Amino acid sequence: MQVLSWNLFHGRSRPPAGRELLAEFSGALAGWSWDVALLQEVPPWWPRPLAERCRASMRMCLTSRNEPYAPRVWLARRWPDLVRSGGGGCNAILVRGQAIREHRAQRLTWLPERRWVHGVRLADGTWAANLHASKQEPREQTVRDVRRAAAAVRAWSAGAPRAILGGDFNLPGPETVVDGLDRLAGGGVDYVLGRGWRRVSAQALDAGPLSDHRPIVVTLAAAA
Image 1 (cartoon, rainbow, N blue to C red):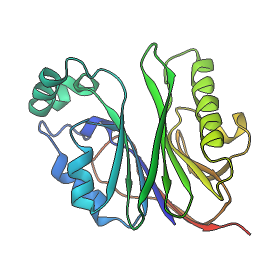
Image 2 (cartoon, rainbow, N blue to C red):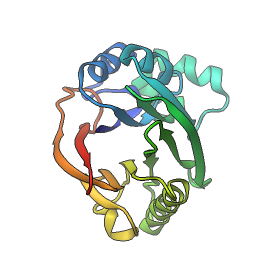
Image 3 (cartoon, rainbow, N blue to C red):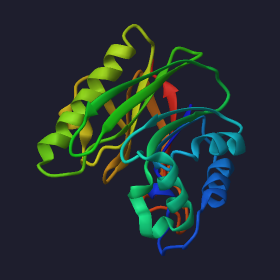
Image 4 (cartoon, one colour):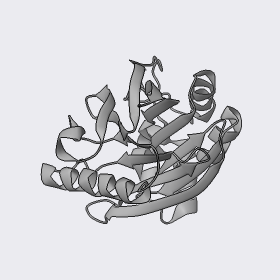
């Protein structure tokens, strides 16, 4: 299985493009090889067209700053670099090649921003979960988010053969603050953790100016 994790920077680029970049982001995602894509800071009107372009199934979870919805979308589509995160956001999971059997989400915190972990159960029994943890100081909030997310994944995947938790942890070395999940790939703040897997290969992809995070992709095989 190939798992990709990428923070989309609310659909923006560096340097700023001054326009909506849905076509560029969807083209990049469609061109890479992956089975599960864990995406953070996604404009909330993007997941469905991203999934369609990638020929994937999709589940999403709204995060922060999404009300009132229509005015935020209107502004963000016209001036994304001015509106930035004020356009609203969500996390999204895209899946190729397998059916999604179940989708669950758990709120991690309301303040200072709403943070969630969400996950899907695939046809082979694997749970794949997606996280964007709090960034604000004190760092203890970030650690709590990560621990709560890991606990949710352990509960959802109890009895399942394998589990994955990936995303933007806003924390270096998140495997050191959780139990039962090993580091499979990543660095900085972007990681893929899991159990029941061994890493075959991992790399950071070249997305050009898209986002301020580099996407990471890891190839996994079931552990003995």
